Amino acid sequence: MDDSSLPAGVQPAEGVLRFSYDGELKAVAGIAVVNVLLTVATLGIYRFWAKTRLRRYFWGRIALAGDRFEYSGTGKELFLGFLIVLLVLSPLVAIDFLANILLPPDSPLLVVDYLAYLLILWFLFNVAVFRARRYRLTRTRWRGLRFTQTGSSIGYAFSMMGWQVLVAVTLGLAMPFYRTARQRTLTENTRFGSHELRFLGQGKDLFTVWVASWLLMGPTFGLSYVLYRVREFNYFAGKTQFRRLRAEADLRIRRAIGIVLRYALLLIVPWLALIVLTFVLYPEAWDAFVETGTFTVEEEGFSPLTVIFIAMAVLTFVWAGIGRLLFLVHPLLGAVVESLCLKGRAEFDVLVRARDEAPQRGEGLLDALDVGEI
Image 1 (cartoon, rainbow, N blue to C red):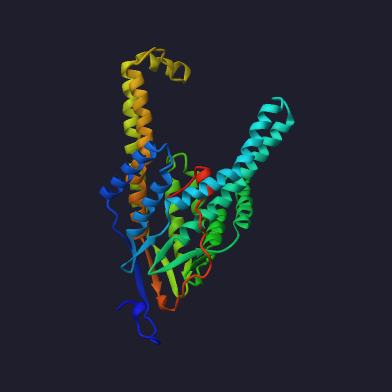
Image 2 (image 1 turned 60 degrees about the vertical axis):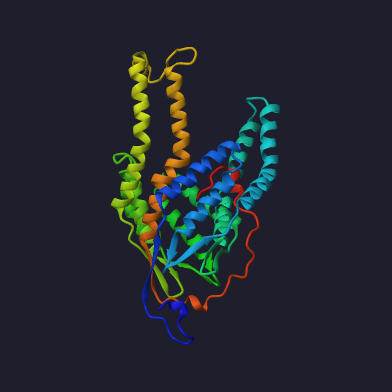
């Protein structure tokens, strides 16, 4: 019997609620292809509806205890948010543009303008992360109850900027403390229905794993970072609680690395094939590369080299829009979701709907800064 259907006054027993994901590669491919074609045809405008379509599919294929999640956001909300933020950012861009035109190249004011511009963008990026997550949560429901996010985006931005400075000053050694602080802030400002989540993690618990990963980053071509993120994910999940439920995750390092390696190989091999083809057709290109470290071939008009460059550009574009979803996002999402479960006493029957107002526009800053995520 489902815990939420127990008669009043009956205490639910300790149990395990498992997450599941039943997304299909064929369905994701169909959505991705249509999204890319329509985004190109509309000169990028459709990307807001493309993102919404993907989220609805992915959310709808995730279930907890047999009940699916649902995403209720719309492309119109994302588009309106984007337009509003463009209006807000336009004075900043205009000031920077005028400064570069009116001030002499050696003016110290140009340096001040450049630094101020970067500082504002840095601040806005962190604000955008918090606000975009709030939008996604308020558009996510399970069993009719929605998630919400409390807290201040400005407070979050200043806090994360301080941590990011510390990470830079320590050459990355403070990374686990920064990521743990970030996770704590986001988790403890998250509500499901009328109740908040709790997070009990501490950065020092991940420090040794991070240092090992940091030292091995070069020799392993970055794969040690995947190992760290898997350990971090499992740790963060295990330190998250919701009422009498505690989360657990057993994401396997081998599975995560396998997905990342397969995606990297599928990306790299076609590129290498095109580069080898270039050197075969143009031996002088290899000689120039060996001597100068640069790739130069002097040729006029439409040629096989032009075709190769076009193929590289198309490959990069298609892989960014389709390949990443098929061979990285989709399998990783499945691996992550299937590794998760909730243990303890389910008390969903005592929850009430969240009473705060949901934002009416979505993720404008993230879209304006071109760093939106699924």
